[in-house]
Image (cartoon, rainbow over all chains, first blue to last red; front, side, top):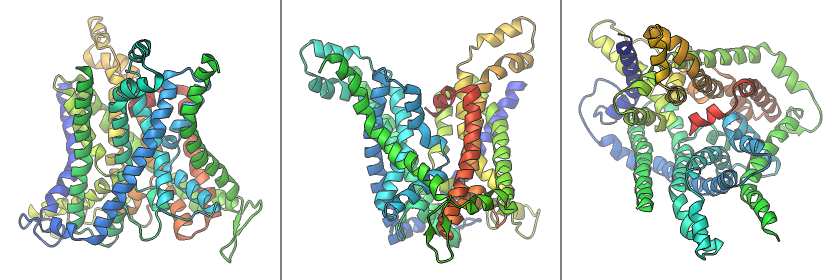
Length: 261
Length: 288
């Protein structure tokens, strides 16, 4: 009886989580010219309009480049820091960990204000560079957490074996450590990319006028009215943000599989 | 250079890039915001450097700011409680399910990965005047005119719950997963019924997860300004909206500095209390 209630409750919660998403996808195929019910038919016209909308395509490019740069920089920083924390006895470890995850604990609005005001004080105006710096700061903790969790699992014996068999430290790093770390690095990059791609809170503070990322573009479009085009954009975003991690997981598993065999 | 000094230097070299990034782009700017909050925005629009308490006096005494701060805390608290009530049984279901737990977790992660702004705006498609809910109501003849259900405090909370619920469920799940299931069986064999075994064994042991999830929901909920902008009415501004207004719209950066520090202190205090009694380990587990 109790279990039955728990199951029903969980079912309702899952429904609550998925219902809005399902409605967005459903409405994006709506033939009617208003983004609303009742649906009058199935059509791909909103996707066609989406892909001919110059502003949205530009936002996509901006988001993509920003996400990619963010992912690369914050993964390099995060992987190096994680290696230090996992592999070495670092004095003041608790403080260092706390500093590295600080951007998660500080409200993003405050982080956004601080960076904007400080860089402006240094006479640096809002720019793509400022956006990139901001995104690196708030994705770094996630990379550190994800990479650390994976790094712990890599045994040091492999490297010691390589070294004792005559490889020098550089060879050992590139031929043993790096391939073993590849799934962790990949997971970190993917995480950083997705978080950067999705961000709006900080982005609205840092973006220069005229530059839009996909979320800020959607936000700007929402001010007018909710057109079916936004739903189509939502569907594309859902496919991307859900598809990428799934693809990433599959690739990571294959990479891990290759190393194990 | 001896091997020992090299061993000691390596972690420092590895940590330097990340720590200097955090230091230069977060810690120093935060310090700067403290300084800036004592400056003054003059009528001409220039910032007067100095030590003025005006921004702080305004932020701390103006009932407008105080009311919005209290309202923000209230909304974040309600959101957290709703997340706990909705999330705990769900996490329990996943942890105790005989089915494929991985699939259930992955399903939960799907909406988690979907863009925050899309998930927030999707409620307009459901509750809006021409949304699914009104259409359903009119189809069955319950109402002839569409009802405006959006743009109030309840829809802000709804949007926040939808955004934050996965954080809660994952944290509770992680702690439930770590509990030895035979403990509950032991309680039962000693005469407790299932419900009592849950209340006196499982629930207390899972409290750290519940607290970690609660902290995340509260802090993230209280720091948002997008949800009230999309799903709230004109009177549903939260504290972060004030910061956004001061910084981006009015360009009153000294006042914006004082306001963002107020938000930081209030939310920071909550994190500190949590850290003092429960430590950060549980929170880190849930985030991984």
